[in-house]
Amino acid sequence: MTLRVSGLSISAGVGDRAVPLVRDVSFTLGPGQAFGLVGESGSGKSMTALALLGLLPRGVSVTAGSVKLGDTELVGRDDRTLADLRGRRIAMVFQDPMACLNPALPVGRQISEVLTRHLGLGRSAARRQSVDLLGAVGIEDPGRRAGEYPHTFSGGMRQRAMIAMAVACEPDVLVADEPTTALDVTIQAQILDLLVRMQDELGMAMLLVTHDLGVVAGTCHRLAVMYAGTLMEEGRVGEVFEDPLHPYTAALLAAAPENAMRGRHPLALPGTVPSPGALPDGCAFGPRCPHAHQECRTPPADRRVTDSRRVRCARHDALTLEGVDR
Ligand SMILES: Nc1ncnc2c1ncn2[C@@H]1O[C@H](COP(=O)(O)OP(=O)(O)OP(=O)(O)O)[C@@H](O)[C@H]1O
Image (tube, rainbow, N blue to C red; front, top):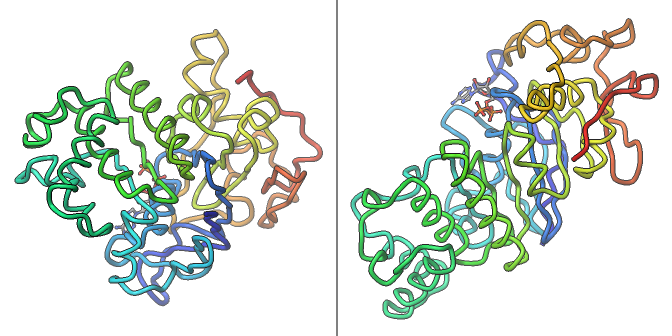
């Protein structure tokens, strides 16, 4: 099942006071594909991810565009329809597992409830399947652990339990928002391996939201780079890493910790990410861009460069930017 996001815009507040958080975001996510959404904190990644599930915070809403899962439009659907689709056709893994796990219920019960609600399984079948799922995500002694409460699980195990709950109904799309940011490095790698294995085994599409390009390099087929609420560049992971087309992508690659370790100097970017209510005229990256020119004072169009690549930079043809080996 393909997920198509077209021209998605999201604002906080309404009317004259509305502040745009996400502007004209489009991408397509095919079955079995892992897509990384990368950018600095505050760039609008989480808002984009939450909008896909109809989970935007109060006061924040989709103002334009469409999110289609197969033939089903998700934007503008009522809460009940969205609640039915969530978990069954599109599911989410958060940075903090306690955002989904109920501290007052045994972990296995919580997974059983998802199976009963969406798949109509009876109690004992749901219980058996929840134990199988906990085993499949690498929880040892799953029969016993299913009866235990979330606080008895370590951080990594909670993340595994949340993944078990998210994939319980074999959704078409899994959205993972910074799923490993709060974990130790070794556990991070294990959880990423698990996500990739689950995605592959179940043939799900996965949207992986992260500020960490290293995470994308090891897990994703394609990526989009987000800055100040818009997508600046999109393409296959290998081609974007080796030959970035947008100066912001090149700056992120140069600043990645792996490069610092290899002795490369992170590109010093003057200034900070503009806040959504105070975007500069023209290209949002213009004030920080070492290559900015006269033409960058008008907003750049989203240009398709090849079948697999897009970029939002008026000067991309004139620039030769340095990439990194993946
Ligand atoms: N409930 C809210 N109401 C209004 N604005 C919000 C709300 N939540 C977040 N924002 C703003 O929306 C913008 C985008 O935030 P978002 O969380 O999507 O960014 P992000 O790229 O996911 O960053 P992070 O990794 O820090 O979560 C930020 O400027 C943020 O301050």
